[in-house]
Length: 470
Image 1: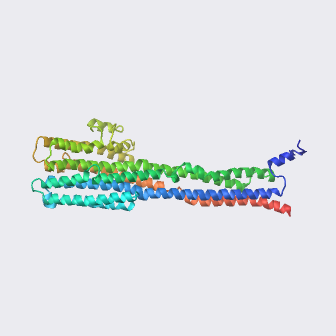
Image 2: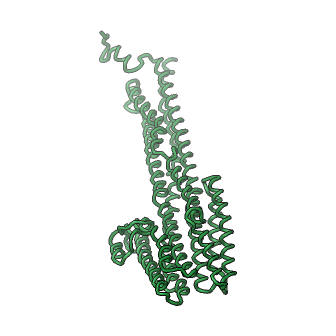
Image 3: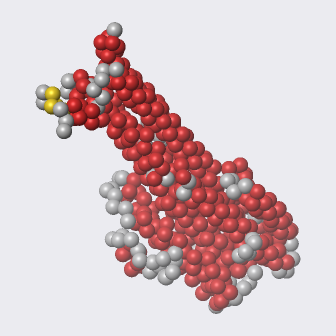
């Protein structure tokens, strides 16, 4: 049985903590060493994690995402160049100016976009090989267009060369646009790998903050120990250290979740939407070019329709009727396809007049209406081919809203606005994902403050025992 001394037992003293004064300084020194180790480990682990996450996010934002966007942009300009070349033959302007200035501008913009892709492409040797193949095919394509220009008026030879050039551009498996699409798919895969990186995994935070949690436990137990042995209710320095360590852990958790949310917004929502915007512009330009080239080659109405719907079928899975457009003013449309994927989030925005949300919604509604007008212009052209109406060439390239040339111009203007809105959203999302939420400065400062406060809280107690020992 334990021997009772006053209100506490000898056994109780031994079980609650060291009874001998000479043991207490040793214990406090060990506590100080453990706290210093926990603080240093927390500092190092958080700094390493922040550096790794920043590297992943920076590579995604400065290389992968720009490559994805530029690939889509290059595809659009090339598809539009092919459309413009066909329109110059349909209108007859090729005799005076060749394919035209717009054709040259489109090719220049495409080459610039491809140069940026080559600079930033994250897919390595495979991407470089694909870009070299595209460059070689582009040389062949422009040569065929020049031959078509030279042979214009020589029976159907000019149209034949134009057809060869268009086939080189649009060949499903290994054409120019197909190769760019394959490259973009590889870039999107690379972006998905960034999203799966261990540095950006929220679960890593629990491992990184383990030393901080251990430090908090030690601080709490040390407070209890000091209260028993020094008869002080609280040690202000250790309490402040506990508060700072808790704040650092919470700040890190909130910051990590915020960066992950921003990365998810950029990678899972904004980038796919911008990719869809460029794809819709590419496909509509290709559809208009297919119609125009079919008129130049004198093809039948059935073949013209097949070429058009080969592309438009990617955009919608049903006819865009006036009723569907009216319903879209009230709720997101119930149809599928790339156009639906692009417009549905914009039409779901419930913005007040004059706000960014309202601007996005209005642009989406105009796009839907003008897409319907574009399809109607195709139907008119197809009917003209079926009845062999004269003057179809100028009509295919005409600027009126009811003509194919005017309809595609109006639609592309709407899509350009949607694309610009997507670019701004992407820039904001990427900038947000790159922000460290102040942790880059907070981690070293707070860890240093915690270490200092632990020292200020423990060493005076150790000195008290030294004074007693003397």
